[in-house]
Amino acid sequence: MEKTVKKILPFALLSAGLVLSGCGNGSTTTPVEDEGPVSFLTGKTGGLKISDFGDSDSSDGNMPVNALLWRAALDITSFVPLDDVDTFGGTIVTEWYSLPDRPDERIKLTIFVVGRELRSDAISARVYVQKRVGGEWSQAGRDSDLEIKIENLILTRAREIRASSLTETTD
Image 1 (cartoon, rainbow, N blue to C red):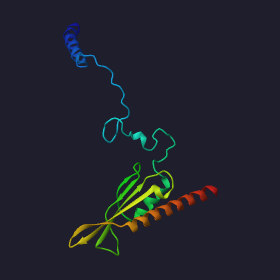
Image 2: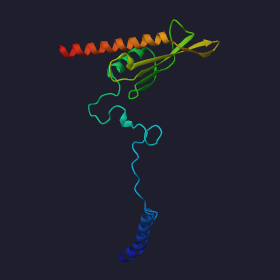
Image 3: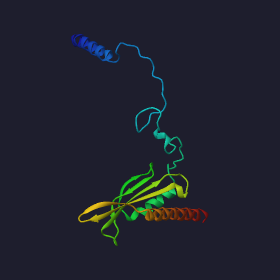
Image 4: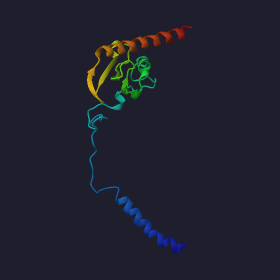
């Protein structure tokens, strides 16, 4: 046993010395000053932190966007297959969808819930249109009339949800 310890001890000391020598480069470093928050988008200082979005410090569990508008937007866009949903960014993007009465035209919806209050300026809808020419789809711009209709539908649905939740609490 004593012979084994004598053989292993130099190897253990050498290994420990190598490990410890890798911990420093022999030069002294000055502490780095905190330059402020680092942007999660660019990685540079002075930007927005993730905690700036949605009050991550608060423990009340609130969404970063108006929950009524968010739920209403999901209800209104439910007739179209969803492509991307970002709760914290307040964005809903649908896939391309052809209306039954217009097979040579298709739409794509992008809904932005941008506020925490139930107000008309807290919701924004974009409706992109493509038309089939030959066998190819080509961009036809945006349908501003349908955008306004969808925004109004979302606002109306949000008010209905709020009214139903108020009557449930009073009953």
